[in-house]
Image (cartoon, rainbow, N blue to C red):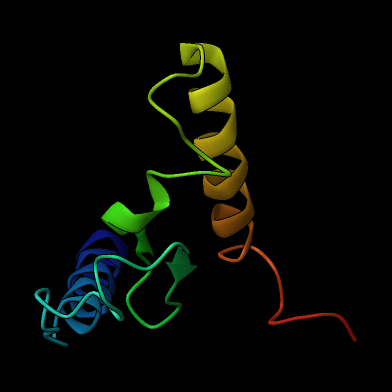
Length: 88
């Protein structure tokens, strides 16, 4: 009996998670923007094409510097998913 109740609760919670539909074509800004952002309501991190220029990326830099610059931004944006909407 408890297994059936647990399965019912699990199914109900999962269906609530997927009820909302989002426009995945809306990235929250223009592609040329030199920025990245996290949207808490959908839980994505968006990196527009504009991030692929200095000071984060340059085709003449070593690969390690390009990865480092992009990962700096990626790490910053990912942390937004774990904090409480700013400092108190």
